Length: 181
Length: 415
Image (cartoon, rainbow over all chains, first blue to last red; front, side, top):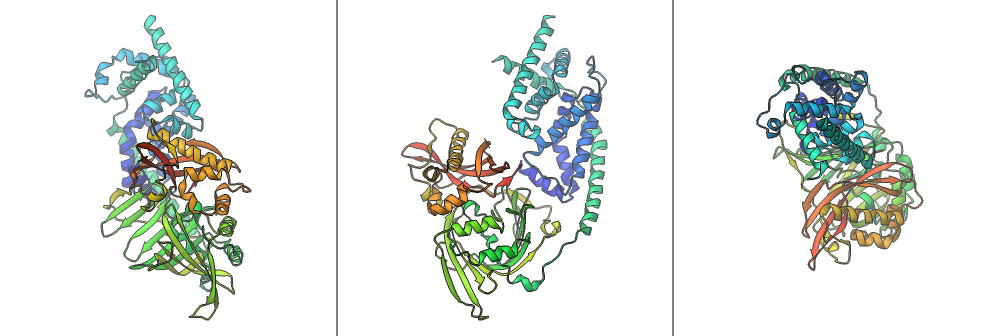
């Protein structure tokens, strides 16, 4: 948090090294957020590009309220939502070939989850309303508190929590029906 | 494990497994273009800045415009001028004369050196937003984006604090006048300036606030009815050398952003300034009858409860409740408390507690742990303001309890 504030301070003074550091620090997390929210996974890089270019243009006048991680994650979520509106949601999930994948075999959860189940969850996530998916991803992936999500999205904390709860319920329901069929 | 927890676990695993583009490949496209965009924005901004014109007030007026001397009193929050006289004979004219000015520059002496101070108010001129203090030994203290920074060149270290702990809680204007007229324990002394022979009126005042004991002398020119000098001491009886003695003051309609654009060596160490309260506050905060019990509660729960109780007392204009929750208030006169905190007739009085946020900072005092917590409140005029409050935890007679020490930094309007 403190490092981010100092980075923003340097960034506002035109320090390109600060922008590089901000980018390096948040890139991977934001790519995950974009990948989880976009219907068309090929747009992940474009979303990150748009967010960082716009952020870079704000040098000298950027005002940080709350966490930088939260701010950038919300920017990604907003971009992803806009993009989803213009791109028809895919009918099927293809995890092969669309993106170069980064193997992270050291993480146990990576090994534990089958590709088939990832595909099931991917489909279930894609079927969620945008606002529910966003809260789930921002809370679980970006580790944002409901309070911060609510503030950044201009909704109440209760609304954010409800969206999260309803989203999880729908996911569970989708996965259960998938298993039964 | 509940069904929700199981689903959360699955989603977490899904997110961890989610394929993403290779970072190295993304960097070439995204970062390169972002850096280009930043360079272009910098060039455009530099061009815009050079076109900014601002008018400097002629120096012949500068000597009269000394009210800003109060700025060096750091953040006095709710209590800025407690102790000033009811005699506002000079202040109305002074503030009227100063109302067109949004920025100020002053030079003064402190033990061991001198300092220059630049300060600018927010757009609505309710409080300061940008402050820079440059000491003669190269130290720089400044505010930016809601934080306060202090650079110590001898250590090549930048100390950081995520709150506005330098500046004026009330900019020169009607609210400040209201404060001055509400204070009740100051003295007014008349005399002549031995250097010029001109008549002078001096206001002597003192108080204990969130920054500890402080006292001032603010000197007005009797003819112009404008303040011309100020001294501040870190005690109640103006003993010893003043902490700051302002002797040159200049006012501006505005100042360019570059004045507040501070640069320090890139290799400087960054250190978070610890959260502290003045040592003398321990005595005031150690009465077991004050505050609320924290037994069986987490720090967050107790903090939220005591802060809510404080603001509810403010909303209800419950003076006794306020004194119990925040014992430091006992140092101030009732009329002052009424006008400055309750603000019964003003649009900027607090009418609703919107949210008490999570603890954002922690520290330690002689009494025990202290925490800072942001609170969002709504004013009668509909605006929302965030104030950070410091809460003191203590264990007295084997019982855990907490009281509100006071505000941490300047409030920030957020909506």
